[in-house]
Length: 196
Image (cartoon, rainbow, N blue to C red):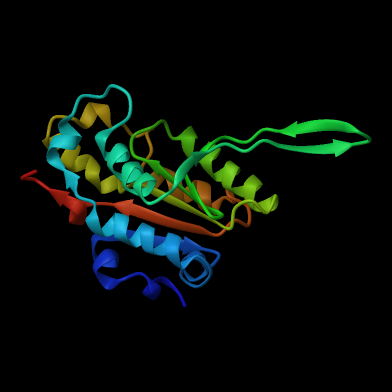
């Protein structure tokens, strides 16, 4: 079982890749979480009005995706992890995951600085090694959207050093997530609605 477990209509709208058979693990072992992700992607629209919203805090694009999942019972999750050596506790710091449910973590990186990918992938790696996380999911934008941002007069807000597909894949292929299975989802022009 591979990416064909994801409905064709979703694969037609997004660029999707996986590492470590992530989609098969989700579909077979975490069917409810898998369905939440599919439903989230199916209902999402990249709205022109959201792209044009001035930057101040979180983007309405991230808010829409996270909000859908939180309505389905996903939560922002921090982990208090430590090991004990000779009765001395040693904390193992991890970063919170924006969307977590039943051993599945999902991060939306729409327009952050690209070191956020390093943070998220390393977090996925560590939590997988600690048997807290089974699959990490990353939703980001395709690099090709830069032409649209330029056309809309927002190109300066979305620079080359921000989070986009071209920055993510080298970090993934360089082993940033270690052995953690990854489902990687890129939003491109097939998600865009110029009239909304």
